[in-house]
Amino acid sequence: MINILLNGCNGNMGKALSEYIKGSSVFNLKYGIDKNNVDLLGRITQKPDVIIDFSTTDATFTALNYAVKELVPIVIATTGFSIEDENKILEYSEAIPIFKSSNMSYGIHLFSDLVSKFSKKLNDVKINMDIEIIEKHHRRKVDAPSRYCPYDS
Image (tube, rainbow, N blue to C red; front, side, top):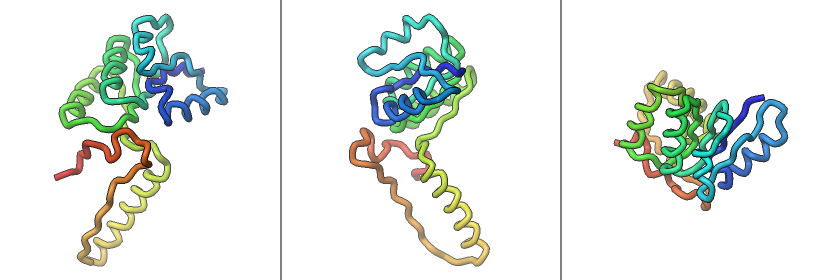
């Protein structure tokens, strides 16, 4: 059983992940943290196996500080980090394993794969095209569109 600390447990994704974990025979939701009980990080009695973060940029760094102190791997699925934040996360990754993705959607990963294949085909036939991809989220996403994109010029 993998014990999980879920940071951002009461957000849309946090609630969905909580429900999934409750039905799992592999994962155990050991701790759920949100803005109303962030002090729980200082009272944890059993170190989790992993932290999954679907929170806010500030809350992510609170969890990261705990993760580095306790040497707990972390999955970061929060968006809206500044370039400086991204650099800090990179520094943290020297101390602990970090898996970070600004979009955990199966659809976006499938789309990324298709775009990669599409661009290779266009390159093969030397067609000059301008293609624009616009980031759009559901209307309830707190930082829609995300404030930082590492590919912005």
